[in-house]
Image (cartoon, rainbow, N blue to C red; front, side, top):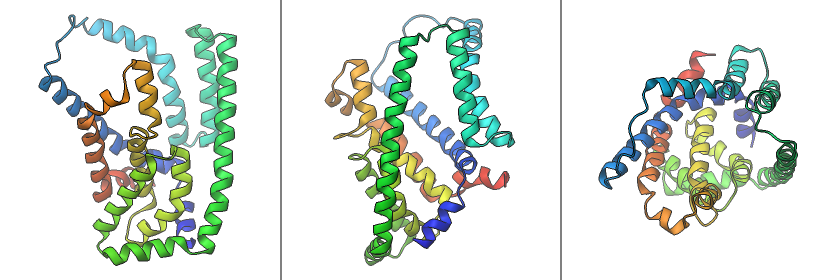
Length: 272
């Protein structure tokens, strides 16, 4: 538990953002490759003609006020002008300004619905934080991380095997738990083990997020997949029969992040 505490203390929001940039690019390229492979293999037709770069530029220009939210958050944190909390608050204020004044799409009814949903989400997260703190205390009291690490070491003392087991366990748990619950409950268990075998806390954070992304898209819970299927009016069974290449893209990125530390640690080391 002391190892986990020291590891978490060394992790900052800025560090996690920087650590996730290169893996995000890798994941994007893998998904693009998977999408291209699927389109060619299944013979998807090309609908319509390319409207031209002028239309692309016009669309990009129209989206710029909304995209500026990303600039506020990342720019504010990376420049040191804002803390993570302050940049999020300013980004929310800017988003309200854009949707009400620029795009004129946010009605009072939708604003109240968004506030109610935010309050509900915040309440759930705060409850999970309270439960996870108690859970973490009892795990430290009964030395659960040490026992789990010892059990894993009985299987193998090779770091690559330990990291593989951590990934498998996180993926399985992520299919049943919500993302917040997975992070809050599993981090105190697996972070000390990962650090014991030489994994940096930032690298573990990105590993955790990719596993959560896999879990959120995998039944029986698979919140993201169920929402997407509802929007697209298609069954989960139909999606599961066709989604394998994209699981492959996520899996390749996960393995790259797990076994090549430079992918997640290069940028944070530059900005130290």
